[in-house]
Length: 236
Image 1: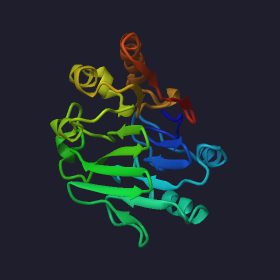
Image 2: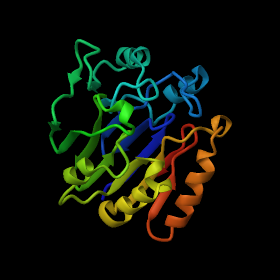
Image 3: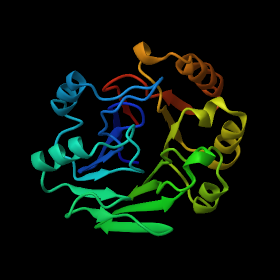
């Protein structure tokens, strides 16, 4: 399997680099939510000066909530790198790809990106246009579930018969029992990164401690890591 590099921006925002491909997912957001983190101007400057966040081929958002997506930052990224393809589930830019329907698939050579409509966590978000993402290239399969409802049957159905090399999941997938069961008994990824955690200075609810406890318990069974610090990079 080719090497994969994953670098965190904030919350669930990542830059994924493998082979000659760079994909940003939920990486650009500035609005701070209570108990979570966002890209401050200082972190934006550091991020855009880093190798991981240079010249993306693809910029994607699982959904357009402000802790995952900023139109202003996305516009700036498009100005800097006009060749980057932009995938959004809402119509925001003239030259974007609109992700819609139960699924949307984009292929470019041996790269395949499959956006799968999944329920957002929380009944109050039932009508949110929300997509998980499967990225496949050569022998690699990467799952980003976005804010998918934990242990969603819709995700289970979409993953039938697939082997996931790397899963990038929000922390409730390991802190909640039903999430752990799904990961251990059904998903069984070769590698798991746990994200959407606040930075240390923003952790008013104790999410970091709860996630670390769960990850430590699961570490005897799988390669599982916390992705929780600004511009942290994990090599797979």
